[in-house]
Length: 75
Image (cartoon, rainbow, N blue to C red):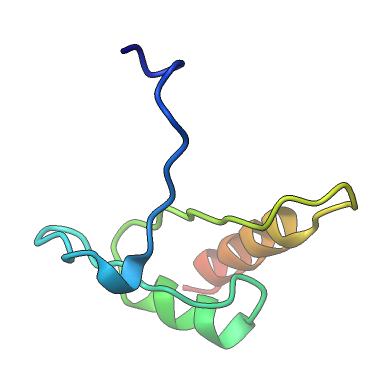
C-alpha cells in the first residue's frame, strides 16, 4: 500500500503517548496567551494546525501562524 492509497487517519493527542524528545502543546491556535506560552516554552516551533472540513473560508491557519510569528518576534 502506498501513502497515497492509505486510508485517512486522525489522531487524538489525549490518547497518544508523548514523544520523549518533543513537547506537544495542545491549545487554541487563535488564543494569543496560549501561543505566547507555547513559543516561550520552546527552542523550535512547529505549528500543526487543523480545522474541521467546511466549504466556508477558514482563517485559523493564517491567524494561528500570524500569532506564532508575532510571539517569536517578541521573544
